[in-house]
Amino acid sequence: MFNFQALPFSGYLLCYGPLALVLLGFIAAAIVTDGKARRTYLRRLDPRPEAERVDEGAIAISGPVDALTPSGVSVRLLPVAAPVAPAMPAPPPARVASVVDNLQRIEGVGPKIAAVLGEAGITSFAQVAQASAERLRQILDEAGMAAIHDTRSWPEQARLAAAGSWDELQTLQDSLRGGRDVK
Image (cartoon, rainbow, N blue to C red; front, side, top):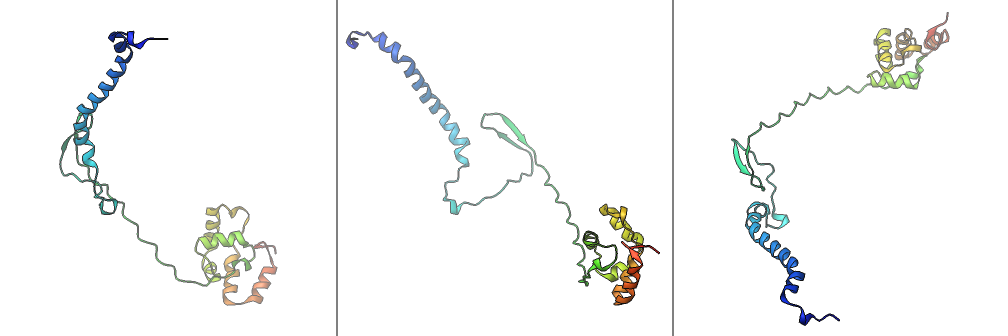
């Protein structure tokens, strides 16, 4: 067995010396930096209860401010102009409630084209009748659907439908195929 009684003081120093140095180093570092930690970090803590705390938000500065970072570096803070919020565009005028007709009753108008016309604000037979065939073609072009559709008869069909002339509309549609005049 090992006899600790016979171990000289230098043995204890050799064994426990490095540990003692590390512990003393930590204690010394804490003592030296403790005051600085209180000055820089603890001053930012708000000791009031959570319910009583008030968030003041960002601090605005009016002129240059010299400050020290926690690492001791001197910095100069310059005021920055607040960003200007973009002006809100005026809201579009409210559309007058109009009659929504079933535009699919027009020969050549299916559900997709009726939806495209509705997105363009054309929802009634009267609006289709007032629009030119070129304007209707332009709306379909913008939606990528104009290649196979002929809009030339749509205003006339819509005029008859808006007037309630369903028999005349049926006669006109009998002479059309897909909205195109076949005669």
